[in-house]
Image (cartoon, rainbow over all chains, first blue to last red):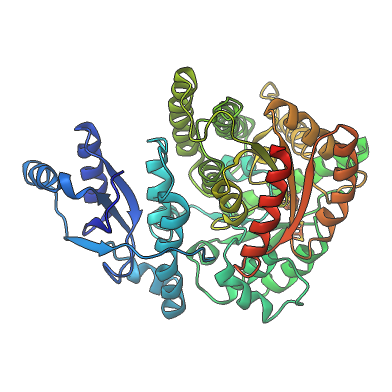
Length: 86
Length: 424
Ligand code: SF4
Ligand code: SF4
């Protein structure tokens, strides 16, 4: 993956919509990763998709074409990571 | 965003405390898991399960209860899930792997109790985990002393059944365990109101065997060099297997294994072919305990097999499917379960033999034998493990640790030194 200081997260009203977009993007060969939604993006937890900045435009086209409902797209700055038990 | 607040409130959860866990998990999972390179596509399912960890599966279990089904919470791989599923119930492994729950357990347990027990008791008492609040009944066992006494505390919270697991493996002990399974059947029938017939038990034996076969197939791919999946990812699959629906678990494990087999055929790996191959043996690592694997793998070595209850002990050995009567099936169950080699048995030569055999099958360069802090059984047995491995010329190091991050740097230094020694 290219190194940039931001990650782009797509958030959904529920996981059904998230899984739908995940499937569509996979079929079209657009890289995306299912991830737990970080606190900076939303206070409710659940899945979101991490996607590449360069793919945003084509992803928006898929969202529109397949009428997938998303909540928002959030850009989050990468932080220095340290191991933490959870 | 997915909103499970109503479900959690109905379960009587402490939302404020629970929220603290929700806050930490995404970052921890991101740093430990999502930072890995070239992960198999099939891991997407498991990333999803973690992302919705207190939502999707708990909702399924609650729906099952709404339809009149029962849920049984378990804490050990000696509890035969087959019985529960044969009665139309759901069995869910509840072992606590979160540091977050330890302090709740410490309020009622002696300080020198292992973190797994502390976390399991804490998760229930603090009401921070839906999985601990959903079950209609907990099923404990007589394995280690810490657990045996913890059951008496948890029994004040939720109906409890205890399976008497023998301490030795003579024929009469297998027969005794058989009788225990019979009692368990009677109890599960009573709680669910469903009769366990030979037909239903036979189907259930196949169901759980299929799940074992899926996991075996996945582990089999880890024998290849370069290894097609990280130890962390494989560990996550096993951890989730403890509470996922068994049929889906088998399906997902097989799907992932198929992808890994394709990788093996292409000689594609997640570590270079010359990376050190490590076996981790010892006590279970319940979700979200990924500490040791993370240290080993970020130091450049691959964990290729776990000799533990969150590893081979969970799925090795199938139940014989040929019996046609409940008595015969229960005999087959007792025989299969009594093949599992936990340090709570004495003597326990089978476990050391397993480690030696797995070292050969997975072509490991070294073994990290580990136990959770205050686990007297595995800690004592580590002496015998070391002795046997020294006889075979297999390098081993012993690590005792807990769930906290306090010893993280110290462990990293020790593990790096061990790996350095193996590289020479
Ligand atoms: S380590 Fe022993 S007591 Fe613990 S889950 Fe495994 S078999 Fe049960
Ligand atoms: S790790 Fe040891 S002390 Fe802890 S529950 Fe398992 S057998 Fe008991």
